[in-house]
View (tube, rainbow, N blue to C red):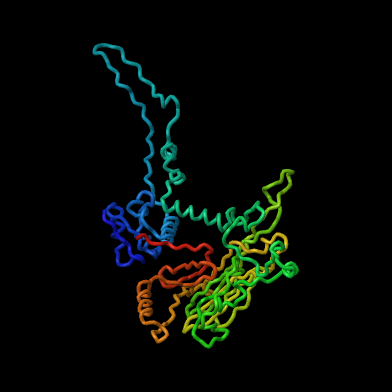
Amino acid sequence: MTVIKLPSVLPGDLDLKAINQQLRERTAQLDWSAVISAPTAALSVLLDGLDPSDDAEALGFEGAIADTIIQDIIAYFNQRPALPKPQKSAQKKPQAQQPEVWEQSGAAPDSPEVPDPVEESGFYTTEDEADNSPEDKVSQDDDRVLKTATSFEIRQQLEERILKDLLGPAGGEYEEIDEGRVSDRYLVGLVAPLHRRKRQDAATTATDSAQDLTGRPGTVDEGPEQRDGLPIAGNDTAEDGSTEAGNAVAESMFPSSLGLTFCVSGEAKTIQVTAGWGQYERDRSQTLTTEAGNAKTVWKRIPIRSQSQPIPLQPGPLEDWQIHPDYGVFVRGQIRRQDNDWIVSLFLVNGQTEYETNPDQSWLFQPELKVKSGDASDPEIFIKRAPVRHADHKLDPLFYAEEQDMKMLYRKQVEFAVGHGVGVHATVADQTPMRAIALETRVVPAYEVPKT
């Protein structure tokens, strides 16, 4: 069996129809280890007429495949019409068969005619009944029979369960948590309120005890230009930001903001932001009861999610956008010009004050921040940020040469955004892998490492 190594971006220089024919004949096997982009149009030609279960060996699904490619393949098989299955022919009406009777030669009396048991019973198998025979019912129920999961499907399910256990919501969008604190249930994805209360037992002086409510310094207290790590050569103005790397900001164990910085094509006019989180409130349970039979008080999750109006791309700070009128949670940002493109920084800020009782009600869980084009007709607006560096006296020539080598080696590995206290996932355009159509934060980032 011939092993066909697929290129990084399908179809490359391959004849997908010819490869599809080889896969049907079971004379070739696919190697997906180098694939980073598989458009649906290419998959429809390559996988046409093939079954993911019956042809799993030829398709190479047991080998190394990137998670994004696995999702593309699964999405293709889910949207593709089911392959026709061979239909069994309808059973014909059974005919009574007369047994062969030995007859003695001579003038023996005729044997009485053997009655037809089927005709006497008056029951016949019609063509419709034949189609619904037990054998055919088993064939029709094949789709409902549990199938053996592949290794990458098992791994994907394991990752999803671990992520729900660490980040949540493990019980669904409107889950109930019967625990003392939500922050003890979920370990990652917590955004603290900007103004936190000091613990009385942690106070070391009388002043600490008296000043119970204090604004704790966090990463949000600094402006976006101090956090995005993308300074631009300029005059150190408020719009450009500082060109010199300042002192490292003291990171908080529980920051009160998270965000991302990305580059937008100069042709784009607007962007649109979607932000949200899981809000947990103390309320009566609809399912759990106390020993006395009363409704138990639990943490109930309320999903908060909202989408902004299209934001015009123009230099300067953005006006604070309050996501929900009942909560002091905002999206802040800044837009700067770099050459002919835009550098945008966005932050989800928890500007609330921590409650004295039930403090988890002022914390944000499962935060999310997503940005896309404000013009549906032009979605591919996110591009790679490529700063121009010159080999002058301030830069070591050897370092510059090594930097150029790295750019050459990783020229197809596009970095669309930089996360601040969070990871960023980019949805790459189908036909243009050097551009993205959406960016969203990921509390638990993931990256597929090719098998070597």
